[in-house]
Amino acid sequence: MSIPFASGSVDEARYRESLGHFASGVTIVTALEQGSPAGVTCQSFSALSLDPPLVVLAAGRRSTSWPRIIKAGTFCVNVLTSSQGALARSFASSSADKFDGVDWEPSALGAPILEGSLAFVECTLDSVIESGDHNLVVGRVLDLGTREGRPLLFYRGEFAELGT
Image (cartoon, rainbow, N blue to C red):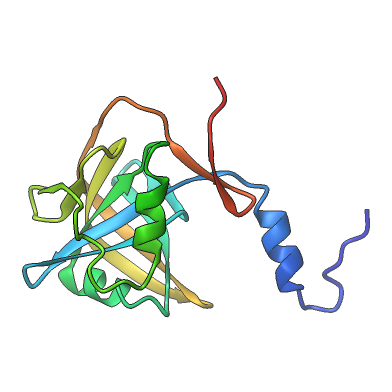
């Protein structure tokens, strides 16, 4: 197999196709900014450190929701269940009121914990690193919790479920 990176540039379609073969979980990151909920779908999320407890996610720099979440200083990562694909699509849009008809409860710091989410991870903003067309956002974990269910996955440009 030849390595197609000799020229120093990578074809965007080939990049998406190749990295699309890595299955990832799907989350919605939420915050309460000036009393109003904000949220965005994010599939680039991972544990970063156990000591101290840190997570990392990639936030699109063109997103209109991310500046509100960063301004809030605290956020909640909601890990979605296999039945929440429509919710993930809704929060991936640039809709003005993504929370219309969405049930949630406030975390200890006020960030929305979405009803039915598989897990939540509440964080304070630790650092933001500009990286290409995204920001790497590091959150310091303050609280977390889980519920029963199966995760929603993103694989090859589509939502997927774990096999039995």
